[in-house]
Each structure stands twice: as structure tokens, then as C-alpha cells.
Image (cartoon, rainbow, N blue to C red; front, side, top):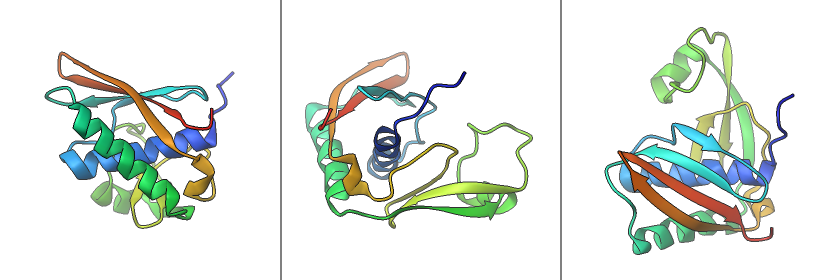
Length: 146
């Protein structure tokens, strides 16, 4: 039995990923563990984040949440998606149309999971810790309302 994904936390994951890509030019996380109470994201990265960088990421994510952006889905052919998105986390034999989750004009990524309808439903995000070891940056976060 698959675990149920909490939509506000899952959408927050997209916002953190989008912010990491924009601020550092890195790829989206290569591994995640999304839970209702707290979640973690792993990135291939060359160092830990400074406390100022952590605060900047958190502030940017919360700024986007406050904008109350629409979260919606779009379906595009996998051939087009390959040109626009990193599909490395998808099965190699994926075909047909892919579901892309868009958060306003801030972020877009292939995804199968459930999401909120607008960013304000997330409430807010706190990055609770980060650590770095052997080329992997782990970011742990929780939602402010939980």
C-alpha cells in the first residue's frame, strides 16, 4: 500500500525545488521523503548552505506562497517534455503525455502527486535544518501551520 501524500507539503517541495534551481543553478532534488509533519529533499551539491542562504530560500518560498499563485496541471507529449524538463526520476519507458504541475509562472515540473489549488493553502514553510556530506545536501522543512 502506497502512503498518502499531503498536498500542501508536496506543493511546498515544488517551491523549494524551483527556488534551489533559480538561486543555485542546481538540478531539482534527486531524492525526497515527503511526510505531513516534516520532509526532506536531497540535492547533488558541493557544500552546505549558509544560514543567510537558508533564510533567503525560506523567505522566497514564503513570498511565493503569499502571492496565492494558481497551481494547475498541463499535459504535454513526452517528446516535448524531454526538451523542457529533467525526466531522470521517471521510468525510462515512459511514453504518451506527461502531467506537468505549474505554480503560476514560478515553477513547472513533471509530477504524479496531489497538490493544492493555490499556494496560499500551504500556509508557510520553515527550513528546519540542512546538512552536507559526500556531495549530498539535505534540506529538511516543515509547514508553519503544523
